[in-house]
Length: 224
Image (tube, rainbow, N blue to C red; front, side):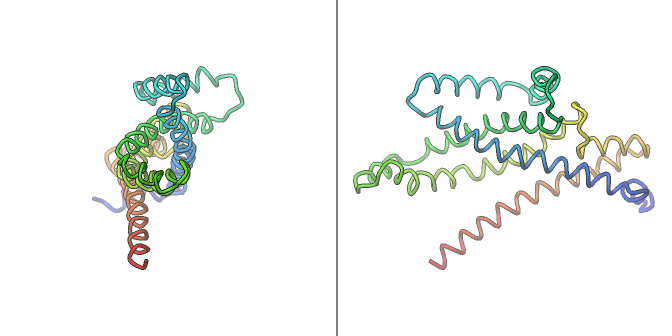
């Protein structure tokens, strides 16, 4: 590969600054959507497994609709329809969209993890005098986190990949910057490969964060 071509594509005339700005937008949308989506997903999961029938029905309908709808269609519906006349910025609409989508996924991840927890342990904790909240906090929650972690990790990586469609609603994210750069330089193959490498780097960064968290927990257990 000609290094001069790579330089002209990714460095020359401040191209790297534009790429970093697009990357920043992608990371911003991903982090905010993950934060709000995880919280909303926990709430939806609570409704889904709860005993209040209307909330359970709402959770089921919400999950089935969101998981059955392409995320791009949901984004376009909210941007060009629901929030078309609002003062929300495109990035805010994108965060709402991906938070909703992430919530549906995390709700199912948390629910399946909850179902995998041995009920006998919870009953034993209750027998020993633990309250429901104490049993959940000390017995159920740690196991939910442990069981759901690998799937949740994949969901985080998927979220980063899903954000690549935000260019359809005028947001200049990493994918749109790469596309514009490819059109400007007339070097689509090298430019797109470069973009893919950046997305791969983000994925490996996520894997590294989860790996370090596992290592930290393992070290704490050894010390105890």
